[in-house]
Length: 372
Image (cartoon, rainbow, N blue to C red; front, side, top):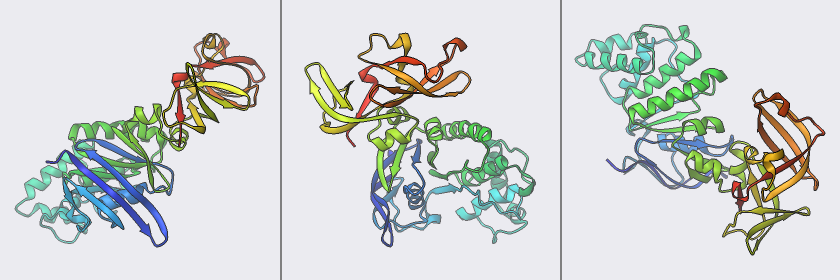
């Protein structure tokens, strides 16, 4: 088996005059969980559909398990897909829905309709099918529910059935198009953990599409951040969050403060001049002229913790949001620059009020200079 289960080589997709995906390159190592992340319309779902075989690239090549598959139909590729809408058959039982995946793989069976599972089980391979359906339902924590009707299931259970139908064929690559989007927040968070655990247990390569940054950070081995059809950055969750490659990535992933100004090197490092204030920043080889730096809200220190830091400024609290053990404050520097700061609240007496003066500070190495 090849080292990579999926490889995209210069893949471009046009719909008429619309450039949906522009010259995308990436590789997914076998058994890894990669998330395609970006806002609506960025090209992530189109990229997923080209891997699945539902869309044909205008240019470039799609490789699965070491073989180019541009000319192969979706059913000829060693992939399965889970859709946001689940796409379950309401006239079938749970077991029949899951067995349908085996029918599509090419096991003997008639056209899918009521009783398809029973007819499949009467054939010579009945025990194999019964065992695989049962085993897969146990895997997604729906044991013994083969005879349950789809309309008797909750949204979370329907999502598990859709997952079981995709997994029962034992694909090399499982493709998931925002499969948790229809679930409520608490269930979605639980399913994030369960999906990641399931992927690690099975060792199957997952390609997952979402616009939810927290979801991507929680689940992924690697994240491909897309914007306007382009691949902005590919890296681990830590790399994407701590070392964003562009202003878009810094602003899209989590919360950040962006400060624009003029970059210059000095004897002992580098600075960025902005509206009359000089900020100490890390040296960046590609930085020149007008650039920006990003500093995360949790990297900024307040009050006594700001003393002695290379970047230290007087500020005024102009807004606050109480989140229990976390205070989120907007502070304004003397030059009018607004910064968002997170403060872990361990004592209610530490809480800041609007209009209060406070010192803020951070270390230069906690900022990232952005040249794009």
